[in-house]
Image (cartoon, rainbow, N blue to C red; front, side, top):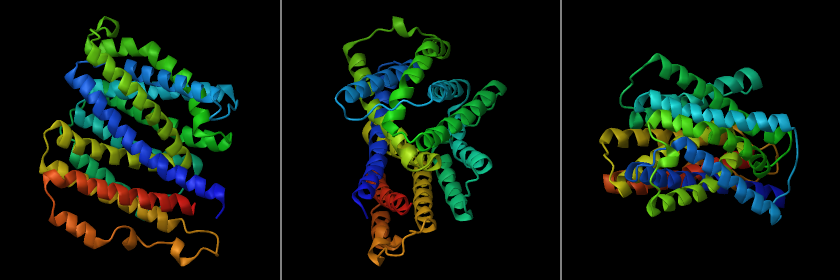
Amino acid sequence: MGVGGEKFQLGTVGALGLSVVSSVSIVICNKALMSSLGFTFATTLTSWHLLVTFCSLHVALWMKFFEHKAFDSRTVMGFGVLNGISIGLLNLSLGFNSVGFYQMTKLAIIPCTVILETLFFRKKFSRTIQISLSVLLLGVGVATMTDLQLNAVGSILSLLAIITTCIAQIMTNTIQKKFKVSSTQLLYQSCPYQSLTLFLIGPFLDGFLTNQNVFAFNYTSNVVFFIVLSCLISVSVNFSTFLVIGKTSPVTYQVLGHLKTCLVLTFGYVLLHDPFSWRNILGILIAVVGMVLYSYFCSTETQPKNTDVSAQQVPCFSNLMPCKYLIFYLQQFSCGSLASLLLFLVYKSLCVLYIAVKRR
């Protein structure tokens, strides 16, 4: 295997790890900012995230860390605006729906993505992949969904949020492949349009949802500190998002996203002492099993095309996740050791995801 292939594989597993760490970090940071300090202007904050990301990438471009590659400006503009709209619709969906229905909205993104890719890109998903995704969605649903209060406006907003999010994530993957641009190049060119879209609609949207004015908020030193920290973390969040979708697929990114949801619940309990029940624990375990199954079936269904691959390059699933280690963790299981169990499963899942991409 050539040097280029090794760099690609290392970049993929690095992107997966960076996506998990940065996303969990920014959720914990934003939770402290919004819950403890009362800064609830999510859409405006996201526009600042994207602005800081663009400025960081501009500095990186000036320092020649990557090359600027111009391509279809209409595509970039449409993609950026669509991303901004999808974020705004997700926030509106949360504002008009119960938390349980909002979680169901997020769960619906995976089957919607599968349907769109099947219909328009003729991508096939095997029965085993479908079953593993179903197990994952079931687990996340058990862990996160509580009430399901329905209303007409909220349902319409959720449907629009699902469709725009799916299309935006599919475009993230297809644009990189069609125009042969890197995730950094695409993010750099689309960030201004995303940021501008959210900056224009953010204050009005946040004001409508919170009945507060973002510009009249009392910006104490603690609030400013967490805003700056959130913006800095968002650089790696945005970069790793484009990187993961570009190197894997929109469905894999959503699977990884639900794993991050489980980690956020876990760290929320361990670090912030959030309420936690055995229903959450059961849901998280089911979800992680679903992700491991998805990763494993992806790896087994994408067999290497080259016949000169040695047996050592095709590790079996039992070597990646020995049952004796899993049984040991389950025997030692308690609420306090939940984080250790999940981190163990995360590591093994990333290993299998790495092999799945390696074989592509």
